[in-house]
Length: 454
Ligand code: FCB
Image (cartoon, rainbow, N blue to C red):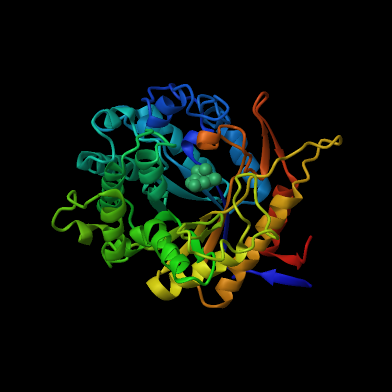
């Protein structure tokens, strides 16, 4: 097969990053401490003992990074704002220097004709708010609205695409339930409360952003997973439905006005003894505030299997599957399935793939090149799936590769590289990988020539 795959004329090609993963400058220019500063400074929390103190030093190298984006021909750039850079205590006193940084960044993007997509919350809660209990408290949601107001008032004349939250499932359940992300708490009830307040704050913030930023497009980004049963057994189907409910429907349903799915409410109660006492009258309407787009972060699928001893066969055969360095199965058809489902089940006005990419071990050849063919193949296969979905009528408006550059991969530290640009963390040198050169060409041609197995 050697066919040209062309995307719609106004399809937006971008790349994504997040503040804590690239900025560094963790305590400069009046920035307050975030839960990720505290977490990464706690011994034993990060695989390689590293922190985001310096990361890609983007706070100082932002101009050079903007030039890099221009070299790639990016049409859009998704980045997040560090809340404690703007409000060191989470609320109250505004740190003008923090706002100035993002102001310059936005102007720099616009000068280069790159559309900014701003994520307000990509997990770096001000530590002061965590000291009061963090997201399990309703007061965190109220503080978030204040923060959204301050930022959108300053940038809303130029930024027209806003994402309230990145992956609230991860923030709530990995941060407060399993404790593998900041703030490192293990309490399922607190995680459920956190998830509720994240969604509540999303609903409140959409209204505030719209009033500060006329004609703005406002959305939220979710990590969505195609969950497939390991076998045709009824037990595996039930397991798949539970996991789908927990990871996908728990967020999609309330955002699109259907309330919390009753089967998941019952499952939380049965398995974790967790309730919804934190929900107040009117909350569900607030969470269902109309949005202009949904951001979909897609990496892999989940194969669900019930562990009951009588359940057989044990698992589906994934021996032929490829897995990334994260241990995630490469499953591009599941991206297609997810997009179709979102469109037909939830009738979402616009969808953006706000993250998609892969970690593979990169090696620098003797000639200095980084031939990351597996990443390139991953991106190509997923873009092919995205294209198929568009052909089926899915209103997919753009694609952001994760990530623009190698960065601090949360609890994995610097051990996993997702970039289409290589970063040498000793020298801070940036170098385009083969996947980056390929992506530059995709953008220039608004598509690519699909070569099976290339
Ligand atoms: C997503 C996060 C992003 C990055 C990728 C690999 O869950 O949003 O920051 O870590 O995974």
